[in-house]
Image 1 (cartoon, rainbow, N blue to C red):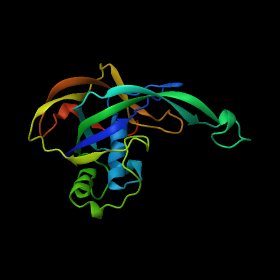
Image 2 (tube, rainbow, N blue to C red; image 1 turned 45 degrees about the vertical axis):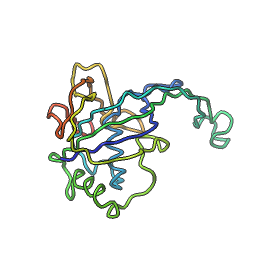
Image 3 (tube, rainbow, N blue to C red; image 1 turned 60 degrees about the vertical axis):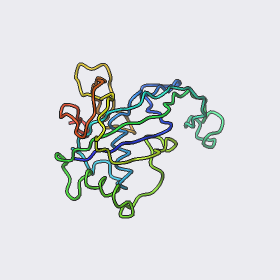
Image 4 (cartoon, one colour; image 1 turned 120 degrees about the vertical axis):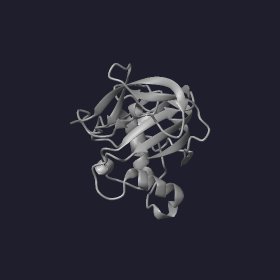
Length: 212
């Protein structure tokens, strides 16, 4: 198991059910964090580390702002992208100053070869051994990560834990289906304020896997 601390100046975790007003989740969804970790190690196959378990604790309370942006869509095949009906204005919420830690437990991974925990450790200690491309982002390519570092918990502190709970009032994507949406796996969570140390309690981990 390994834990890393992540900092990002501006992010948006769009609720897929939002339309003209693009609301953001206030905490990083497990699916987005998993995607960032895959990008960090240069892995293009989303299913490569199925079965890994993540625990997430947020240190900051990001400020929420609202921007007006232009969104491209396909409404008229006869005109070009972003022209005429193929664009519209969209309000989007943004989060500012996100800081969180994620624990990666690879004991249950189903694939062969180096685990995600091992590859993350390599990326931190020997970044030259990692082959990847593009900026490291949390979700949209615009939402670049400022820093990723090993988190050892030597200075315990309080944080807002994302705790799996069937009776929780927060529903977040764990495995997204970007094409039709029907294959997205959701899970219920609650946010619990508690101390943070080197290890994460077992009940705070969520398995990253597609719907059964």
